[in-house]
Image (tube, rainbow, N blue to C red; front, top):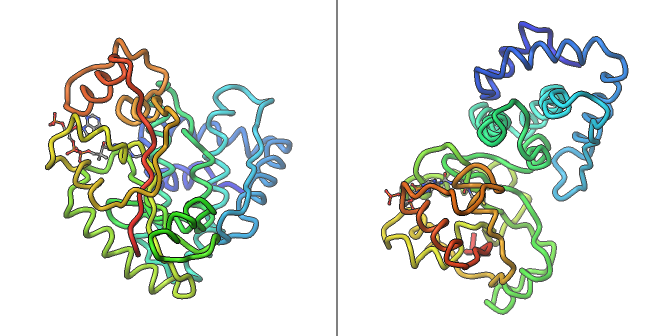
Length: 299
Ligand SMILES: CC(C)(COP(=O)(O)OP(=O)(O)OC[C@H]1O[C@@H](n2cnc3c(N)ncnc32)[C@H](O)[C@@H]1OP(=O)(O)O)[C@@H](O)C(=O)NCCC(=O)NCCS
């Protein structure tokens, strides 16, 4: 199910797994292949992951390896995604997905190993469930942004209807995501990414008629306008979207997670080096809350 040690190291490198984590992951990989019980668990996990490959919104329930050591538990999703590679690569080939899009998309695994190390100082996978979208053909990275094939729900349907669009709930939409560690969110990078996505989905998913792009993110909280200059990338990014709905639920840990790497950091100690760091921390220290912004534009 897993490549041997030499090949596993190369596969991890292709998936952008940080260099400092590769030796340990290869070592632990041997434990997985030598243990019939772990292998069975791996097989069941891969089966669950790739079932209904390509189908949008299927419930994927990756089982927790809660009976293994801490290190193996944290890293086990790496082996699940590696073992699923032949399936997702075959699916990408069937759809004619270019090799570089496939590579950049699946390299989000390495990004989430880096994010785990940033937060905990140890190898592991941050948010393994998030990566199921990539390994099931639901999400693609095209330039600066990631685009997730999705179906919008009733609330968004009602909002779009009131904007005169009238799509029924369940109509295909594209959810936009902004990956970490990928340079500035410049308007040019976003324009390029959107242009790539326009061509990509028309060519590879011609049967899915996407009507809108949606984004649900702390980066769309309109309160950021109070703190960041008008010409900052984040504010320019906000301006691409119309407001889909206003969320009043506090989501303070979101900006703390994405700006400082750990949602649980105490707000008194957050550094103030950049204008974003000052914005996020000062607002919370003054007793304010951050919210998820929900934006859309016609596709
Ligand atoms: C989205 C992102 C690329 C924007 O960065 P950017 O292109 O530099 O954005 P801006 O031009 O608007 O930045 C304005 C200021 O905030 C700072 N800033 C922006 N994002 C920052 C971050 N994540 N951490 C620290 N500082 C940040 C910039 O350095 C700049 O500082 P300065 O005015 O002191 O020079 C960046 O925030 C990022 O990588 N975020 C993580 C991913 C994320 O949050 N995704 C959304 C998940 S829902």
